[in-house]
Image 1 (spheres, rainbow, N blue to C red):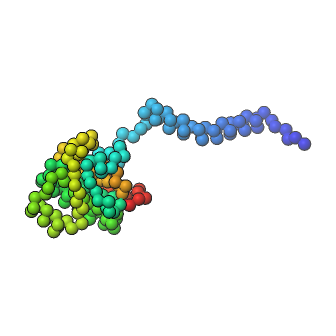
Image 2: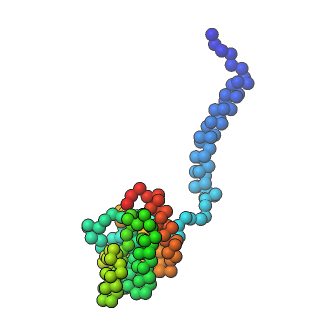
Image 3: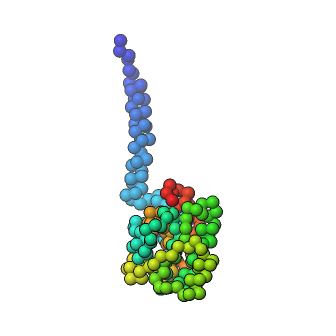
Length: 191
């Protein structure tokens, strides 16, 4: 025995089908239109540094890292022209940020890559006051060719794979860098 389907039931069934399709396909169409026509796209960002979205590693800056280096997040200070006052301030800031990570401090390290030899006094001071600071060599010629590397001392956040993530200049706010690194550590499944 076939049930009788009335026209009102048929219209209601079609309406339900259209509503289900609209709920499923509608958001995809809206997202595609937002992307294509660039509307309702947030203008703000949640990080304070300059994003380095090229996927390049430390080697693109001319930084030579030993093969036995541990894979952790890194606060890398680069100084192509030697470690002057700005560089020294960034080295201090990198250590303070690493300490500020508290229980997450083991997931990060700090390092200095200098294009010139350090003065004897500063070298001794680093050995005495910054025993965990890793030191790398930096090729100033390679560093100078990198489009993301302005002149002067810079602080970079490097992921455990060695990729450059964020860059800060010598006038950067330490609290903002700490917040950025904490956010990266929170969302990261590596390092």
